[in-house]
Image (cartoon, rainbow, N blue to C red):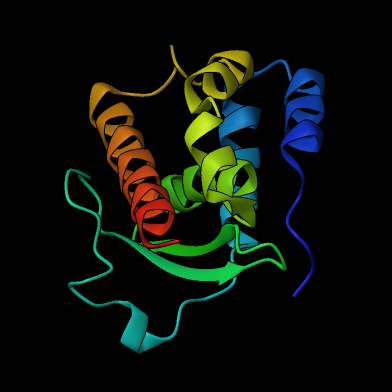
Length: 145
């Protein structure tokens, strides 16, 4: 699998697209780049509550040489636009240390991309649910470290 597009590159790409229909198409294209989750990862344990669409997040944790936990995420959804939102969220959080995850500002990123005012309240609630799940996993990793 190709490495994920960086958050900075997503911001740059968004800045080149003026039309919101084209921006939505770009978000959907990002979602198509997500690595498929195996069937067993579409489990109740990985399901994110609070999303209108079905969303699954799989978390894996590794510690670096100093014992600092880093978390990697994979995600999937039954909705194309939500898969793209997952991609954007994972570009911000996946592969980072647990503390960096807790320090990251998804709201600032979504505001910078203009998504804050262009997502429906249901989609915004789903994004919050995904981020809270990721942050909860990061908090748990820090407590266990």
